Image 1 (cartoon, protein in one colour):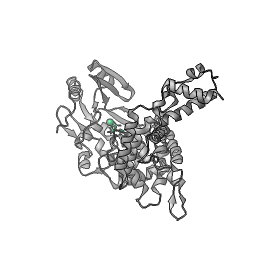
Image 2 (cartoon, protein in one colour; image 1 turned 180 degrees about the vertical axis):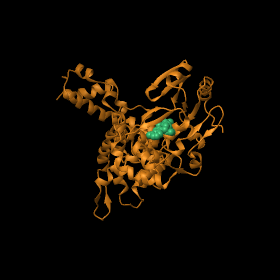
Image 3 (tube, rainbow, N blue to C red; image 1 turned 90 degrees about the horizontal axis):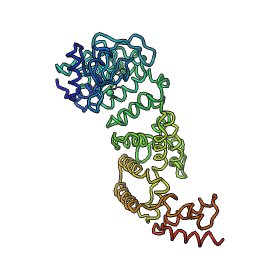
Length: 443
Ligand code: ATP
Ligand code: MG
């Protein structure tokens, strides 16, 4: 079997084998290629100890020598070469490992059968002691060994299972599913970083992320880790159907290359359950849900220990996603809207709106949206002043005019910004100084 690895993988394997050390390609790349998908990072497992690996190669980086991992540098790429390992003792999170003599031992400590494949880069042999290839072909996910034990060794495997099930369209085998369900209550012990990375891997690697996310719900993971989203799944359906299903379709409508935007789509409705009230006709209304939603989305992102930039971006997208200027707006209205949402957010906001539109079964949306996107682009092309910093005058000019610095400066500049929002041609030093002279100097 040829899995078509990068040349460097064969070259590294050859050097190690020539030095007498058995070496295999393992992990995600082998799984992805056996599934017929493009591979991510190629990892190698070897009989050589880290010290021996460092002797064989000139350019190495000791990236995890305690765990047996050495980075071997080839051009600008780095390949992880890890000494065969076996588990000796586990306590809920990371197994304590020691080096092993045989690749089979190394494979036995891996989580799922599809991840326990090894492929020999020189002979092309596929080592598959747990029938992972058959599981991939027959769309089945199983743990290596006894499911409850394997989850208890590392509860992150619960989330990994749901990710792989979505990524490779796998059905989770019954015993694995039963143990997985029972392990969900332990997920609160995982670190925020690992939970976040898993969510971002679903967003960034699983084209139909909805499959993994629907499984999060079915398994009870939402209720355990993301109660705000569990509440969304419980919303009563409206004329357009279920809010949760619409949310999932919106996530799928955004490409994996935009993981954070996908997170914003996932969280876009978290303000709706707590905002819901009856309207006078007995239907539902959701006044102010976007404000509440932005706050809740921020809570979720903080809990995940996301970066400040990501927290802010997601909260702003949730906050502003329902508001768009009306289709026939004159330019000053478009410019005021741009000022309100922030010009840096605009393209992502439109991407999110398109995804949400596609998630509804969409009448009337795209033409309007396209037209409004066109208006935004046209308005932005003129680089209109959208903040007081863009004005042709500032504090210095106000002082030149004899005004005393103070809070009044800010008021004046904001009033000028209103003027130039209506008429950007006014944004010239002379014209603005004239406005200040006539309106603020002779009080
Ligand atoms: P991806 O790279 O797409 O996230 P992956 O399976 O390659 O998926 P990695 O975290 O790169 O994930 O791990 C590489 C390999 O190490 C896995 O294929 C699996 O064999 C093993 N592995 C990773 N994490 C665990 C774990 N928590 N428990 C057991 N084995 C694991
Ligand atoms: Mg990997």
